[in-house]
Image (cartoon, rainbow, N blue to C red; front, side, top):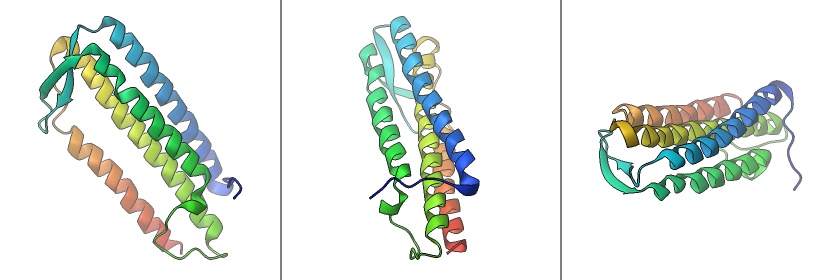
Amino acid sequence: MGKWKSTGQYARMNKCLDIIGIILVMALIITTFMYWGKAPDIVPTHFNFKGEIDVYGSKNTLFILLPIVIIIYIGLAILSKYPQVCNYCIEITPKNKDKQYSMASTFIRIINVEMLVIFFYIQMSTAISMNSGKSLSIGFLPIALFILFGSVGFYIYKSVKFK
């Protein structure tokens, strides 16, 4: 199974999404280490559905999110190179294969960037709330879910449209 190459109208977008993803991962790593150095011994570690801080822990818990984000990023980045192993909601035929693989590869990259933005926002909110006591925005969860499920719905719509 060879690596699938993105060509055509999605090639430039895929390259941009890859660059944005790398920048977000690097920014998350750098800011985590910056905030960890300035963090008090006790930091917020969990927010409830209202966005209020409800659990505190050691400042070392700032590093819990980092490997999770990196593993998700690497996993989705690898998966985006092999869209032929994914499940599709339509039958893949020789006629639609290139278009479907191209859309799936781009979709995986978009989800990857969205996940990075969500995790980056959570990490920055945790870091900011250490000193200010401010909570996570109450609209964060509905907005994040709307964006993720909206992307999935849009991809399914486009996939079925171009079968």
